[in-house]
Image (cartoon, rainbow, N blue to C red; front, side, top):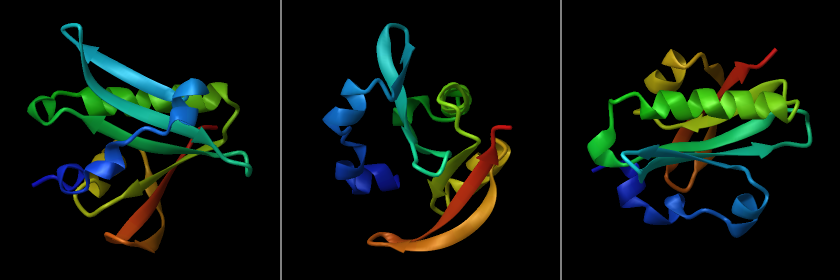
Length: 120
């Protein structure tokens, strides 16, 4: 079972992110198919939360499109680097999207990789 379905609270969007216009939504045939959130950081970088894609649409390129949109959005916010938190299943995906390992952190759901992508 995908981790996002095991931990559905991880899919909740904070209202302040929506109000600030930080959410990118991808539609497929007029219905929401996935989303990602770009959160600016005080250090001049940004974090990507997601992408989250409807399971029946996985492996169709939507996740990669959301990451590319997030990178462009982060650049428009003048971020120099984009960070992602990746579990063992999503690390290869982020690597294919140009992210490199930047460390590891422990979370309540286990250890995860911190990955970064230069936006310069």
